[in-house]
Length: 131
Image 1 (cartoon, rainbow, N blue to C red):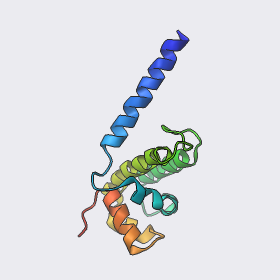
Image 2: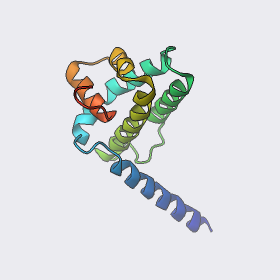
Image 3: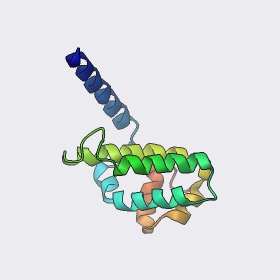
């Protein structure tokens, strides 16, 4: 019975990992996104604290921060490259849902990095270059 539960959990983990990889932005390299992870965490924290955003968006962002800071991940962070790649995919999905509600102006207002980094974050969030 224990083997069946463990096997089921591993299967579920594998399916989630494949789904996250499938939904990543197609033209974004993992290396590009990994360099931005510290600025992304600051961006998420700033957006989560922004009282002008709807409460549901802020709750989603606090949950994202908890996931990023949690030692429990879909792929453990000790696995080189792939350990942080799942974090990038989860951030991309969350940013897409937040930008749909909050808009690009909130993203730009809260971005702590430079213009090149913001362009990558916009791609992560599913925005076009001219948006």
